[in-house]
Image (cartoon, rainbow, N blue to C red):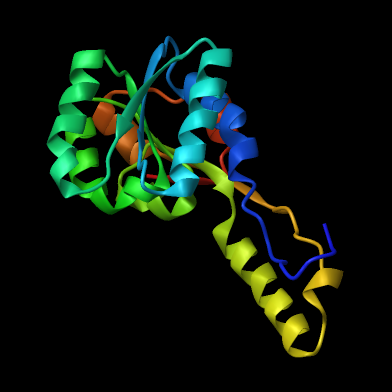
Length: 193
């Protein structure tokens, strides 16, 4: 809220975890164990892990923490997913730099994947749900314009997202042998075929 020297547009990421996991459970009936790939050196990802742990447990899922701080951690992290019996992967944005290897692993083992932003849907992630980055960037540009015209940050509240996007990759679903329900497909903002 106004009053300080900071303003902008929020992604509301922490508030979406429950909805994200509900969508994943709908896409993958019978899901019980979800591996959460996160970076403990990234503050946002570390907070996100705590939220993922809490919300997964509340929905009856067993969250498996899979910390990844850099390339040297990848193979041990993927081995942990197998040992711990992960049935799906929640890939935090902070580890998406390693997405090629992670998605290769997931495809080979037929593990559904989830990401928090549309940006990664074209990489082969099964399902993404989060605030529209395009909308957020456009709204942030509007804030920059206001500031350049003399508006004071203290007078501009931090805005919550106005648009959320659900993207489903049928291409990935087919490769994994996952059947997405027509009801879930109907709710998607975008379906990648």
